[in-house]
Amino acid sequence: MKKLILLFLALVLVAALPQNLDAKKKKKKDSEPEALTGKSEFRGAWIQTAWQDRYQRMSPEQCQAYLTKLVDMLHDTGFNAVIFQVRPEGDAFYESQYEPWSRFLTGKQGKSPMPVWDPMAFMIELCHERQMEFHAWINPYRMSASKTLVMDSQHLFRQHPEWFVRFDDKLYLNPGLPESRAFIRAVVSDIVSRYDVDALHMDDYFYPYPVPGKEFDDREAFAAYAPAMGIDTTQPDAIGNFRRRNVDILIKTVGEDIKKLKPWVRFGISPFGIYRNQRTWEGGSATGGTQCYDDLYADVLLWARSGWIDYVIPQVYWEIGHKLADYSTLVKWWSDNVPESCHLYIGQSIERSLDGLATDSKTPSLPQSHRHFAQKLGQAYGAGNVKGNCYWYAYQIEDNKFGVRDYLRNSVFQYKSLLPAFDNLDKKAPEKVKSIDATLANHLLTLTWKVKETDDYAQRPKYFNVYRFAKGEKAKVSDCSHLIAQTNEPTFVDKNVELPNTYTYIITAVDVFNNESKGTKKSFKLKIKKK
Image 1 (tube, rainbow, N blue to C red):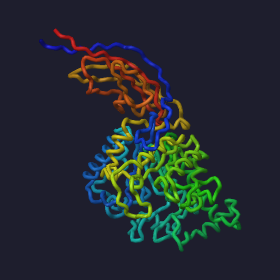
Image 2 (image 1 turned 90 degrees about the vertical axis):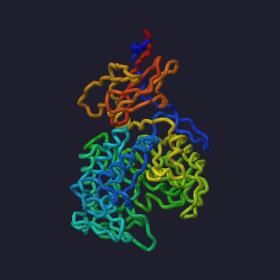
Image 3 (image 1 turned 120 degrees about the vertical axis):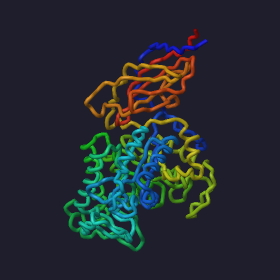
């Protein structure tokens, strides 16, 4: 006899669920490779464009196809954020009125792609279609990464060579000049105002890394501006104080510019993994390497504590037990010293997280074992103030180097994870969704719901979470084990329903600050009636 599939919809209840849904983190044994037990976790990957020739060897169509595949791979692995380098050396992976097209994109600085397309805009769309964050990564001061670089006429050096310092055969914008800061701020404001970025990201390149026997020549700027800053030029570390003040001013004003333009866009820094050594400053870490504060003149702790930046990702790339920079020591130090108001994520090196790494070898032969990696991630997850990790770098994940993609997907990112909410910037969650409805056809259940309209951009849903529970399962969303989908539209098609059965769905909305709304719960009883 012919079977007619009928759908009986029964509204069970509309539940007001807690807004702060993160479960408490449970400390894990170092050997456990399991994922963070809480609901939210930053899972980022850096995609660097500097020193990459892959893009210039592709046509625009091939490049778009490649980036689509790359983002799909990261999303399917379990990542929820991409940090993409859009300004490698005073040039651009986007259409800029200030700087020329990057040679890493087209092979020649200033040469536009043909036909013209905008990689940053393309990547933003890819990420947001998959409910992933896009962080625009720029290098503020480094303006040439090679002494052989042939600069385009549009490059800032061609217009204002007096703003530059040559150091170790590379060109840097002089951080001591107000003109340099004004230019960087203009570049940042241009990006934030014209592109739908979720964050503006700077890494560890502020003043250049020290080179024995070479000095960064900023004597003229020091003489001209240090006294006006109130710096005692007779003090032993006067030049250091001057340099730190220059970078402080840049970070503070860039952060202010971003929040004036778009209060929901975050400003993040990925500094070198050692702030200060204990032998230099009693509050420092028990380490012995290069220092952010003393060598790169980046007072990251001041920026975090002053609220000038929204997140920090120290590059804690070393091994557990490293003689000069022990991973365990540094993770604990950063967790103890970064305030909760500034999100802390740990920068992880894939190559330096595997077993058998000889720390004194430049090209070690690494076995495909993840015991050490599991220990490192376990320590990060166990630290009280760490809200996630960022992985260096995406191309190794793409290549599944050392089996890292399989390891992350199968052992670490077992479930989806929501991005941590910046509730210190805005803690008001969006309104819960209304009027969940459903239709069933060909074993496909289509859910639709309504959203309250608002003129407040911060209250508009960025995307929606769909949780599903089978009969007998407790409908709680304190973790993501039942999160089956995220969608930008107020509709979802569940292709995996089994008949007859009863399913309970909870729908939540997420805003631009990653606040999740209260959940709306509804159960649907699916039956087959025979005639």
